[in-house]
Length: 206
Image 1 (cartoon, rainbow, N blue to C red):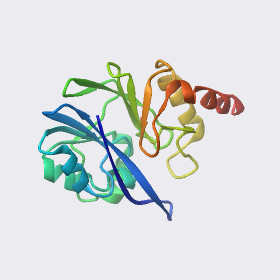
Image 2: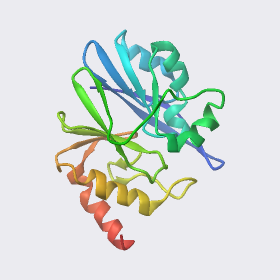
Image 3: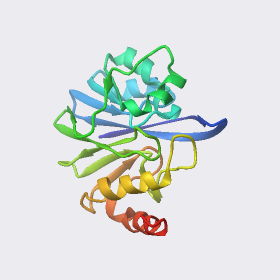
């Protein structure tokens, strides 16, 4: 597993914020899956270094996670996967293009000995998905769960009770030692985030 970071601007609801994005590359020395395609495809291509890219997996459709997706697809000849519920966000960034594969909850994506199970976790956006690598004891959470708690809500297409239920019912069932590789910032574990999520859910009566 490798980490590439890129810097750029997240834009939504008329606001803009400078962000650093994590791009996770999972596989072996022959083939990989790339999680998210943020800001600039060139560092991702450099890190792939000629390996076959089995999939460009977008955890969700916010611009800072997809704005390098099409040039990356062109460069490495790999399909883009995105949950259909985030197509409206995709269309803002790429109105003349389409993802190649609609991410299906419960399905798996495999590369280089890793099998990644799709876990649909709406709330930060309707189509947010996490990807569980059981053998590696890891989950790739995009912007659903961070070191410090759930992803942001309060903007268009987001909902705090929904994200809390998603995390509680679909991520907190994983072992506490499961490493959470996030879309921004440091990695964490399921156990480290459990109490924060449950406490906020209890405050909202969920």
